[in-house]
Image (tube, rainbow, N blue to C red):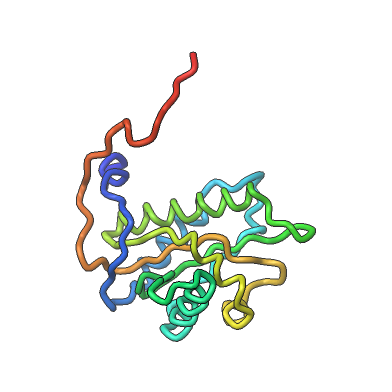
Length: 176
């Protein structure tokens, strides 16, 4: 897909089929994440965790429901794959620059999924699992790493189509 078409076709997908990603699709998405810009080149302060186990995805949803106090909330959006981006704490703190870097990783993966004809959605709500020791244990994170962003990805129930994005969507102030 050409760059402009890719950007204008990318959208948040919240309904997926049960069909799992192929190994080559997953590899392409992960490679796009690894190609993302990261603050000060500190790639070692990030960890990607691919979750495809249905029981663990359900447990993530349960933890998010409890954290948000909303039994109808679905953190994973029913996607067959969730790729979690975790960042390493430094002296008990999570750097805002590393959170921004995690967002860049997710956006690269989001665009790669679109290019592959897949649906995906950014999951900022994944941070809710930080309240669940059971989920954190099952994610097998390296010591000192905490989930901050994620991407739900799979075959969309409805394909994305190129859309019109007006330049006025986000207020822009040009200072000359």
